[in-house]
Length: 422
Image 1 (cartoon, rainbow, N blue to C red):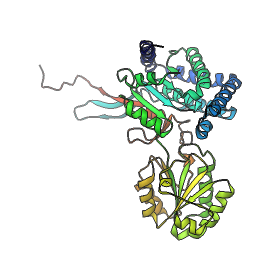
Image 2 (image 1 turned 30 degrees about the vertical axis):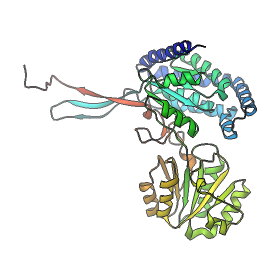
Image 3 (image 1 turned 60 degrees about the horizontal axis):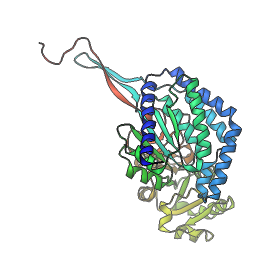
Image 4 (image 1 turned 30 degrees about the horizontal axis):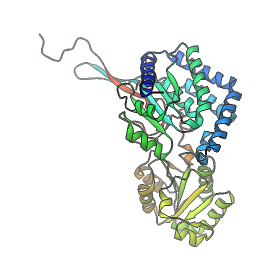
């Protein structure tokens, strides 16, 4: 394909997206919900074909030397498909934000002023592996009135191609623009072309490894909301309930080690370091590799010595780094220095410590006495999430329908003029 052919293809993609977003901005909620319901039905009907396509993608990925963590994220088996079906049904039941007017108030001059929620426009989602993102991203974009271009990784091409066809069928079945959700297989040059199309695309959302996000952010001329790495920490405080702490520590790592909200570092208050030998033994019995600071290794010699690099590493694997800290202040200082602003937890029965941690730790999600796994759109009532933003824009943490809208000011008058009359 020549450079001109590639430019022609990306121009066609963005033109269709622009046409679709104009229609979607005015689409009835019933039509959007019907599309989501139809897609759920199509996923059920085509479950076996999706599993087979995904199995082939996974075999090819392993043969091509794709990293194990990425292969794990590529998995799209029956249980994951069932999870997406449930998510689609939940998103269909959520209130439609488009057209909602917030903060309506009467001004001194008699005008009635408010803010109406409206779609952002055309979204570009660039991501690795994760076929479920093709469903989540499309569903949230559609329900919030946005058109979306889904550019998944080549390692998921087979499964994503089928999902793109199912999206097209669901959109047509609901009477919506068939290109409202486009699942694309593009070259790097074509993606760069899209990233340099600010007149056609309104927002870019990259999801994947650090390198992917940095590359997209550097090359894009379009605003980017980053779903960056998750160096998530758990501080076990001086008044922690050890039984609660252990369950939180295990759940935050072992439930899904390869996700961005899995915990990576445990900060243990020095006042309870007598618990470290038992904690390390339990972790290692569960198959977790433990890398500890010098004080940790003195308490539990079976732990491997941690390096400075470990504190800032997103393992995406069954590895924990452990550090002994002298109090809440040092724990928060460690998080500020090495954390990624994603998800951080305090385990304590001391209410004042919990309040300080929640108030002072500057992360997108901060929890007291709960697993990092609750940094999750479904748990927070969103149905799922399009991603977890670590930026400081209007969207921070799990992104759902509200975060994919902006607003316009709406003013109702009764003949008022600004001047004194003409």
